Image 1: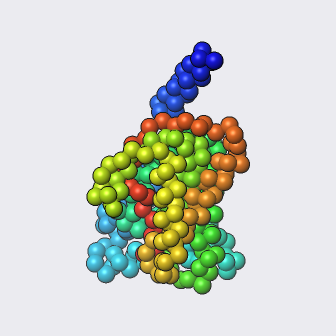
Image 2: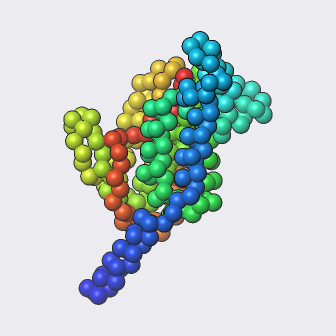
Image 3: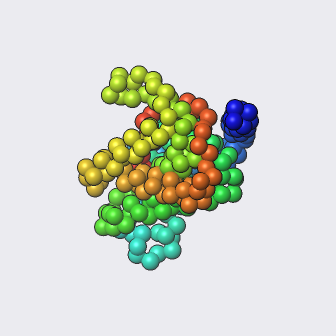
Length: 255
């Protein structure tokens, strides 16, 4: 019995070392693409073609309405509007919005990609991100506010990671504990985060701000996909992960 347990422990340790060291090109490509799109657009303030002051603000409004999700337009039957939940995944409303999302994608995306494989992870990320934004739009079908950001897809990554690596150690800085860094398992941190998003979604007013409902939908979709796809074959031990000042990715932004 002891010999068997030792063999299992050795195989598990080797598998976890492989997860930590394996490349994650899709995660890297998504981060680079989001950063390039942001730098080229008006929200970054880096592209002189958009001008400054009022001209820049006007360009930002036009840009978000062109590439972001407008719930009131999404179900109008327009083919262009139907594509916006996909394009909105690569558009961010500001530097904090971008950097918060990319940080979480960098920390958690690689693990999920390595477990799922490149093609499945790509389809998973895009599909769950699209459906998260679609679900939010359906719940606010009359809204004319624009929705942009990758948080629905990244929340799906967190949901999948919770199922695939429930014992992964996540270092979190919790505001209500004076940002004291704590190393907690994913099965503690991520459900707590999801509960906060759910509570916030119930209190959020329709209008500019964070689309918490998209986070909740994305998280639930990610967990469900991992559960259905991997069943009892998911890894029940995970590598130690150092997440940055968290408890959550930056939300979908409604400029």
